[in-house]
Image 1: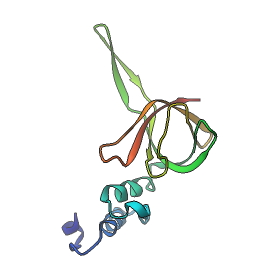
Image 2: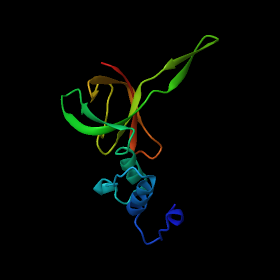
Image 3: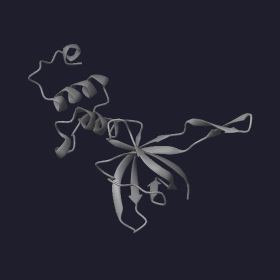
Image 4: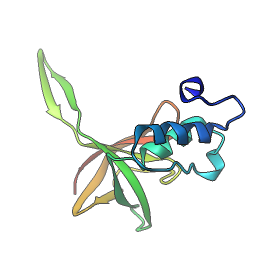
Length: 139
């Protein structure tokens, strides 16, 4: 990616991600979390969670603590098997940055606009362990 952007090896990973995001034309600047500034996956995730397609959210734990964060929503179909039949059903999920929400749990809630969602099941980290994949249902 450095070569495609015309950047040398002396440029930081965060600067490479900034240059890449700028080349996409979204008009945003990446500001990776300070502990992960040297982690290119964390820097890329920070850019994605600030880009179009992400939404502002308020995360509330079962204890009532709130966290202002951003989420990426998804509604992929899942195939369930019942006997010899396959049933396609819609799912409702979202991704949360681990740096913002360190330990989501089933029963915690997320407010996006006027919609309140409850985490169901066990949240799982992505391959790079940067963001949580959470299954949700309307509260």
